[in-house]
Image 1 (cartoon, rainbow, N blue to C red):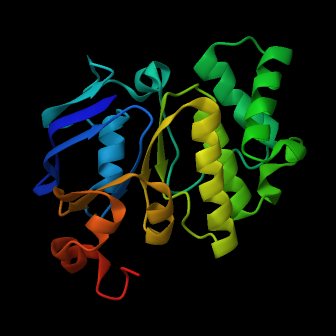
Image 2: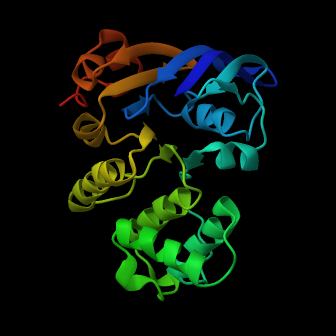
Image 3: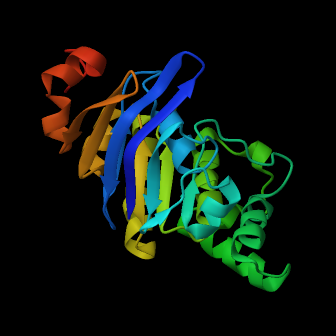
Length: 241
């Protein structure tokens, strides 16, 4: 479904991504990890058109989307969340999601768009709070809303950027259950950037590891988490269990 070929992105003299190859198959849940500054969010930004790579290509369903504008990428079927959630604080949950429905699905304003927004809020467990101003939401609720907003464009591929960050263990467990629920209900493929390794172990079939912009490992979570180069670069000996 998604393939990167020799993807390279530079910022002045800094090479944020260095000839990175990757492939995501339909229906998979794939994790993307690495220390801070390793290039994870940069890769998300290249995939979704916020950055144009200096070298390499991004292919989605066989179509070259390298450098396509973000709104084009979204309408082709790639949705994403952001590491720092930025909802419209003074709007209700329903209004936040309805904006994405109107833009991403081309529905007319009114009952049709509201009904679809309500469906997405129900899906992420916020249906009963549809009329609540988002400024009153907890962090966990805002992260669920962020997922609903990403789903509003009807993506086939969903990119999640640190959806577990800042959550307590109970909220992390609920978030994992939500991810599986979303995949089951919508048939989505997911690529997840995350630092909460236990959550990735419980969620992902495969993990890709970046360090200094280069891919250094790829495989099943347990295999990757115990890879010597990964431990040395990112995990540390006390973070693998």
